[in-house]
Structures are given as C-alpha cells and as structure tokens.
Length: 345
Image (cartoon, rainbow, N blue to C red):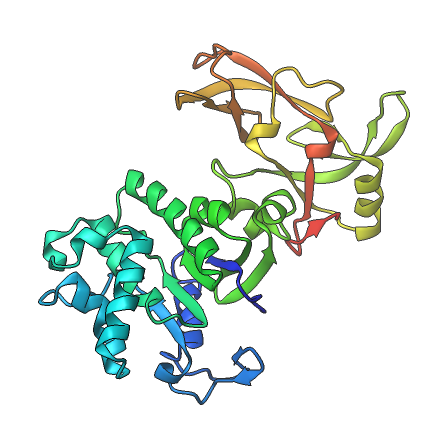
C-alpha cells in the first residue's frame, strides 16, 4: 500500500480488521514482523517513533488534564527545546487555525468534546510533521459535532497541504473525507481506490456488502439464457426465480469467467418503480417501510430472498402491499460466488 504525498488517505474496515495496527506500525508504536515501512525514500522500520516526524491524534484525545490548552499544545515544542517566542507564535497560529484562540487559558475539563478534539489537533499541527496519523478521532463526538468536525478536518487538510492518514470504521466519514480509501478485512487489504470507485466497482463481495448504507442487495444467482428485447436468447443470469438481462460486455465477461454460481448485486438506490427497459423486475410483498424524511427504505420480500430499495417519499407505500421493483441493466453487478471476486470491469 502506497500513500501519496499530501493526500487524505482513509483506512476503513470493521472492528478488529487491522486498521489501528497499520497506523501504529507507521507511527513506530508497533514493530513489524516483516516487510518495509518507508517515509519518502527512507526505510523507518528501525527508526524510533519520536524520530519519524509524524504526529498522531488518538481517539481519547490524550490531553493533560492539569495543563491549560496553551500548555497542552506547547508541550511537544518545549520537549524539543524550541525558544519561548517561537513556541508562543506556533501555539497561537495553531489556535487561530482551529478557532480556539479564546480557550488557551482553560483546562481540558472545561471544554466540550469538540473543543478537546481541536486542542488535540492543535498539539499535532503545531509540530508541522510530515504526516498526521488519526485513529478514529471523531468517534467520541455526537452526530451533529461529527458532521461539523468532518468539514473542519477537510478544511484543515486543504490549508496545511499535509498528508493525512485517517482510521475509521464509519463509511460516511471515509466517503466524505478521503481522497482515497483502503478497505481492510481480517488483516488483509481488500481494495484501494477513490470513494466513488470503491462504491461503484467493489472488487469483491466483502467490499460490496461493507460499503453502502443500506448495504448492497446480494442475491444468489446462476448463469442462464434469457430473452433479450428482440426475444432472442442471450447470456444472462437468473436470481430469485427472475431472469436478469445483462449488458453485452458483462455477459461476455460472465462467459469468460466460467463461473457456475453467482451473487448478483444491486444497490438500493438502483431499484425503482418506473425503470425504462429494465434488466429484471422483482415482484413481492412489502415487509417494512422506514421513512427518513427525504427518502424511504422499503424492504420487499421475494420468494426466496428479500431486497431493500431506497425510494422517494413522494411514493406512498404501505406495509403488506404488493410491489414491483425494477433495475436497469447498467446497474447490475455480478460476483463469482466461489471466489467472491467481482466479474466485470
């Protein structure tokens, strides 16, 4: 895995997948059993954490409760023997950048969670390190403050022009903040790409099911000859007793893959009520309707499975009613059920 200079790089995955371990390896807080860790051209496996010129921001903030905000931010600079005037300038510049000028005399116990997080960030940026390592820094904040701090971190990254390596299990944070995302599972790297690339073209079933809320609908399927628009038979798939037409390119890649068992994937927003020339139409009974104000999530029970659709609230849908949902051919995704790998580009 290679992280580019000045990018906002996110390590994303479920709890226990190795995100924090990877970050601590980069920081020098854990020792690598094998492989190389490089900062620029410099191999740092044997370099002490304090000599790697990296700043880490922890989930717990790790502030000294008996010190003022000013002294918390200045602490690292004093350890590095900076002059008093230089420390004062750097601390006040960092405080101004983060909007905490008026808090410099307070103690951490007098601050809100968002303010404490800004102090922790101030302590990191005042050092002007080569890169910032952030381990779920927003997880202790309420939902409204998390949204605000996400925007603050994106602005800070842009202003500092520094490299950010950010660990989270929250895919919303990853999708809205990262220039690239690395998805991890069980200690293994699954996919690296832009947020849109990872969302639109997941490399395997794990990424497909992990990215997206609600998650991608995944239905057991098999290759089949299905009727095309001109009633000729063409390569396609059958899922839940329904024939699914495929775009020509995907049909060819399915044949080339030789897969005999499939998983068919459809994002909830790609299931609709009025789809022109659909690849497939699913008939079922509405099991659940969850209204979110601007949209509703509708769970449709099929013969042998169920699917979730993200629909507009302008459509009045009631529990227990019958419903037809369709998907366009370009929104159908296929995975080899045996290898769990994506079929297609």
